[in-house]
Image (tube, rainbow, N blue to C red; front, side, top):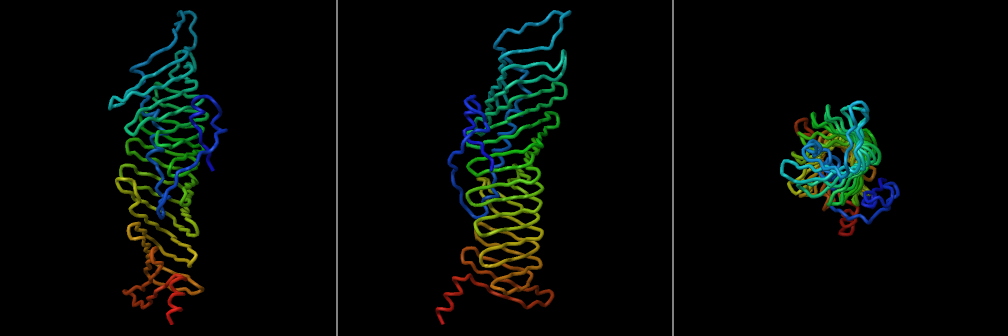
Length: 352
C-alpha cells in the first residue's frame, strides 16, 4: 500500500520522500464507514497551492538582485531564491518559495519553477505542498507540477503523486499518474484524479483502493465526491470488504451529514452480500446506519445452509442477525421466510 509517512522530512530536505517510514494510524469505527473517504482534505491538499497562484503576480519579493541584460545580449531570465506572497478572497496570506525561476526561452510565456515549496493558508488550516519542478504558463494560465509532488495538511492528510496540472481559466485540475494518500480515515491509491473547483467535485479515476481499519473499498471506474452535496458515488465493480462480510455492486452512493458522518449507503446493479451466514442477492440495496438494517429489493435471492429462497424484498437486521424475505403481492407471490443466525437457531433447539 501507499507509504507517505514522515513527509515533513521531505519538505525539510532531510531525506527523500520515497524512503519515509510509516507512523501508527488512528483507528476508525462504524459499519461501512470505509466509504467516508476524507475527500475534502484530499481536494484541499492537492490544489491548495494552485488555487492561490493567480494572485502571486500582485505581490512578489525577490531575495537577490536581478540583472536585466542589455538589449543586444538578450538571454533567458533567471531569478534566484524567489519568494511569492499571495492572498485569497478572505485576505489569508500564503507563501510560495522556489530555488530559482527560469524562462523556457527569451520572452517565453512559460517559466520553469525549480524546487517549489508552499505554505498555503485555507479556511481549514495550513497546507504544505512541494515538488521537484513546476511550470507556469502566464498566457494560458496553467500550472504544472512535476516529479515528487507531495502535500499534507494539519489534519494529517498526506498525498503523493508524480504530476498534477491546473487550468485557472477552466478551474479544472487533473493528473493521470498514480496518486497515493493517507490520513486518519485510512489509505488510498488511485490511477488518477480530476478536480472541478466551481462545482467543488473531486474524482478518483481508474481502479482505486481505499483502506481503513474497518476494511476496504475498491472500484474500477471512478469515485466522485460532491463536497457541496455531501455525497460520493463509486462506479465499476464496487467491492466493500469488512471482516468476513463483502458487498458487491455496480454502483455505490454514500450520503453524509453536515458532520461528515455516513447517513445512508445505496447499492445498485448486481448487488450481492456475502456473510458467514450465507449470501443475499438483489437488484438494489440500502443500508441505514441508524437502524443497522440492510434492505434488498428486485429479484431477491437468499442462500443459507444449502437452502435457496426467492422473493421481491429482503431485510437483514445487523444487530439481531435476523433476515426476512417477502414475495411480490402484485403477482400473487406467497413466499415469506424468516431466517435466524446460527446462534439463534441453536437457542431455539435448546428450548425444545
